[in-house]
Image 1: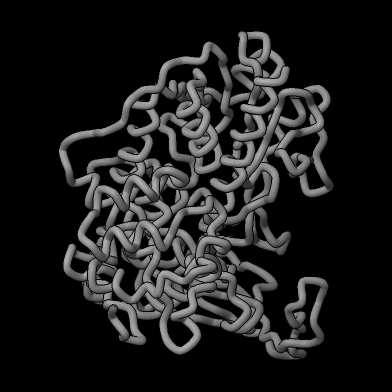
Image 2: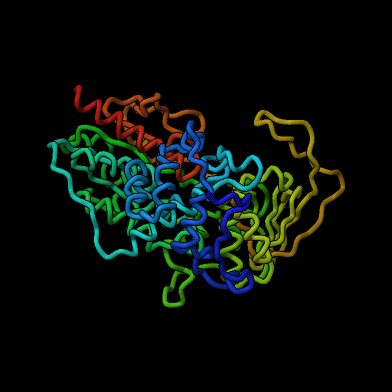
Length: 460
């Protein structure tokens, strides 16, 4: 038993060095560190950590195996419910989920569950052999629209049950937000593709460059012999503020900015992907995507990068770890500030952004105190690039080209508890249903949908 109140420290790149490269920030535990951290687990009888995991990973069991040096067994336990452990170990908001319910967190730091999950996955990836066996086919076909976390999870769970699964992915490579949204320094793309290769080994067929609603409709897919369809197309439609100057050269969404850098490899010199070269960048927003955009801009050579957020730091939805890393890397935080106008030069390029200071008033419907403008507090922020990281909504293409598919006022697909849409045989989950949320919540929806699809086809 390790009675330390603190986690075993995770090795990291030096902040001054990493702020100018795209290599992974956190370097991961070695075997000795992992075993030492695993021994902090109390193996609680009621396992509160498991209740905080959207995919139900058997957390004390896998941690116990790591403590005993049985790393392969730990990986087997994790992957019995989680098909993307190397991803989840890196990007899950564990502090709000499994680790948030850890008893060790009451009088100190919780057990580093995410770090241990990552260790087990990375350890197995370092082994040359693959122990994945393709299940025998049950003769039933299911289509999955979207190769992001929700779609990959649904496809993997169904493939393990013997279904012949085909993923229809709009981009030229599967992975969804794991490939286009989360930067290399947080989630190396080679790791994402190794996780996807495991699904291919299970027999999942992935068809890329398939924009459903354009190339094929949902109705046409169902006419191809697929007995059910899962829609996990994400939320890729960015939101803007609607203020003057958003059409200027140098204003873009975080979605576009990160896609150019991550998916289109704009951070590598041997790719000719056009990316704005900035000296001073303002990123508007306070979530994980805002942190990703700001930290990417710093790595792309910007001298000054500002996070402009209308509430206080305490209300920021970004992970504490991401905020901490951003500050270490020199990102400047302008909290309780809000843009009101973007100014341009004679060439139509961004010259500055007019902001107004804010103060917190009464709580709004979300329970957070509403930001209120401070009179006569306007000022100019000299920037040449403005990146809007204000959230995203589902692209309307699929729902507007499919008969009988209902959506709510935000454009999100309507589903019941089984993830069934208003169209028979068509299920949906992830950001296409919830709007922009976390990777692990999307995966949880994919698991629920896979179970529902299996029951639907068996009883049809």
